Image 1: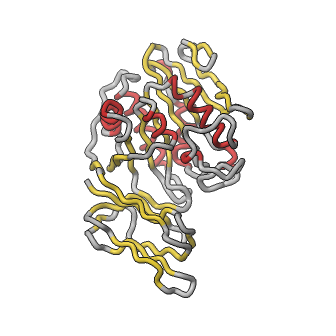
Image 2 (image 1 turned 180 degrees about the vertical axis):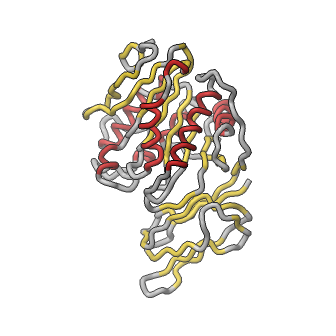
Length: 310
């Protein structure tokens, strides 16, 4: 089998380059199993300060026993290296854009747009399944969860939901997003997930072990490991609200990630520098807090809090 011009060699790890129009290529690692099977794409570090996924990608690269693997993994271990080394929140320093807002990309656009175009052109066609690893960055608190697409047709939705149910996170969230890495892959017919674990630019050994175990569970579900797939108890969030700042101000969250909500409960307050109330955010229904911003100063349009219900 040939992937990106490289002949797969059973049992080997091969460094490959993903072409980016008009720029240096993006690094990827091809992990070749001993037996034929599906191709799983795992991406990490789309946002450079989301560390759990980045560290787990490193660990998987070192530890995966390829003699047990059926198929192959295309690992994008650090999609945004400059964002990582410069500790940039969500954006790519090359042009100040958020890669997860730029798919399908433009081959003649800015660097981020060209990177998105390269990933779509060269990585997506190889994938049978894709999972994108994220965290809460240093400005967010979140409860572990997995997003699955519901705007890409019933076949993709069923395959993605079924895979999500194998993961150990307590929440799976239906998403109608279309322009992120995983959601664009779903639009192209590739079952895909976005996994969130870790927040506030922190990580723990327990989080790394849980995330790595989830990747092994996904491989088992896809038939890439000769193990029985695991099912877990999850709550499925079918409706979610994503509140944004109505103007610049001081943000005071009144609830914590994972907290149960009652309709009408105060979620947070936005004030001016003198403490005058600008906006009070309240829950539209009973539900659960998915994540919220922890920084004090916010700009108009910044994400503040997300909550959902089954």
